[in-house]
Length: 142
Image (cartoon, rainbow, N blue to C red):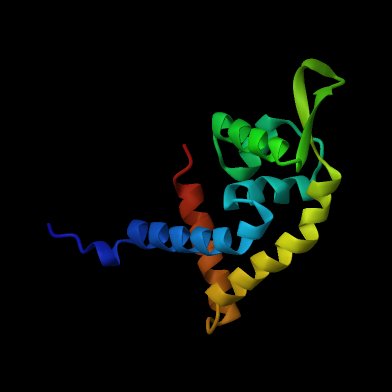
């Protein structure tokens, strides 16, 4: 059986993901933030003061990767770790003033990338695509 890679859903998804990440990386270069760090910041803008484990789940990353991202964000001054008062063995992650302020610059840039990526695509087709991709994701859950 011959497989045409250019027609493979997995290949198309991966290629598109790489292109979107690289475009976002270019937009965020001046702010010293990667797309992976953006995802963590985005979750913290919605819910500050959560554990690295919760952030890993919310960003669909494994815990070691999440901890590395948090270390980089902490070194850059975007987040701080504070001992969890309910469990002194764990930490909660909080945005710093720099982390809070970055929202005003980074969100509009993300929308620029999304607008560019979806240019000429009917809004209904975008919703259908998101629903289909979310169903594929759910289908592959363990």
